[in-house]
Length: 117
Image (tube, rainbow, N blue to C red):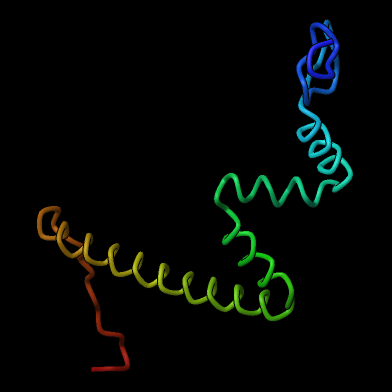
């Protein structure tokens, strides 16, 4: 033995010579803590790794008050739909007015009725 270790082993490693998965004891204990922590820890760690923690916190705050969030989103989408409806109507009328002189436009002939003379 050299320095209190068995021949073929590395001090501080869990597993000896020929061990299939030689991991340092610190890593092995950290892995055990992560496995005990459960899915919540893994989700938080994944969010931190992907740098999406801020977005997750925002979504969490929005879903905390579900009724308020629903009403706010409904109002925003309603206003957005109205703006889009008006914009499409204006663009359609602009396109017609620009193309009408080239195609002759819409001609309507009016006749007076019998009682209006």
